Length: 389
Image (cartoon, rainbow, N blue to C red):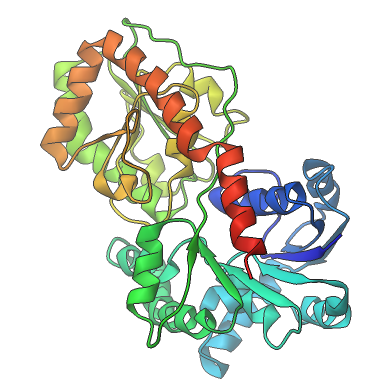
């Protein structure tokens, strides 16, 4: 059996954000297509037991390196003056982890980096090297610096050119490159100085038996996402300022739930009589099952929106923006896409007034996910790319 070492900058479990979901799915897919999987990850806490329980049955060995925030911040400060690596690459780098990888590389057929933050560990290694860009970080940071102020604006301004150069630097340093959507792929290749190959692998989305009930007497809008992530912050800020006031005039009983961990002060300030900011919740299903509509009014960011696929998979009726729809397939059952604020208000109003249409669209949405993002579909695609000569 061939062996793969998956390098992860963060714990691949619990599945609390898009990064963990993507890494977990890589581990799952390698295991499913017949590889013996070892996982090396960094974190700030002693969470190895939780990670191992979450990855049960998928791995041969889990190797954990604990790195404190203080150590990470010091590495970022040092990197500002000693190298041109992205700040996040410096933040997640561990000399102890690099030493372990060098000592054990001969055991593996593949070294798999879960994003650009772990790419620096793979330099000069002998086994086949694969990088999962996941998103085009440079595209994300380009928009993020335009939508933030203060410290984060400064961080994004510094890291944007570093990320852009680093994405190009590693493009030809790996044997195979993966990414989550064609939009992100095109962005990176458009900056390449010579031809390169990047393969698109979308996330898969499990479909279970739960379905969102259609209650014509309920007027709840739900947004789900990590609420310290700039694209999510700008999305709910936009929705609260530009969409909610008109909708509340039309539907005084309307309520907007912003569901997700670590809300920033700016997000918490959006709470009022028509808006609830939940913070971390054990189960997003508790809010999805009371949703009339799921809204994902993305204004920035990159990649494929897991929150959309997960909502569609339980029969939600989803309304998004062109930015939110990037990376998704156009087909029957897809989310409604509003081109501007007025159209979003009109679409949401129409759907609130027509619960039967919401129910019918929800059923089509489940089939949309089954057709394009079922595990069997993505697994075959993943296997074809990994095993191709």
